[in-house]
Image (cartoon, helix red, strand yellow):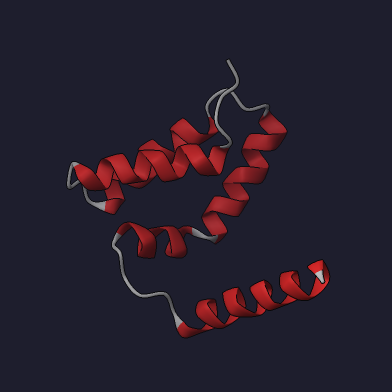
Length: 87
């Protein structure tokens, strides 16, 4: 059986922890460990860099806070670019 991609595992573990009303500070390291489990060292290191760089966004989602306006603008721009490339 193939394991889920690290971002999927991280999201699922954080969602489970939020349901149990765990604080982000406790949920984050546990979810990170689960997301990297079984990955080759180079991939683990790469995902660790990605997840560290996006930790604030993960926290915001975990706490269900509104995204910063820059994030909304970038997501909108990305959707427009993808739509234009598909045309």
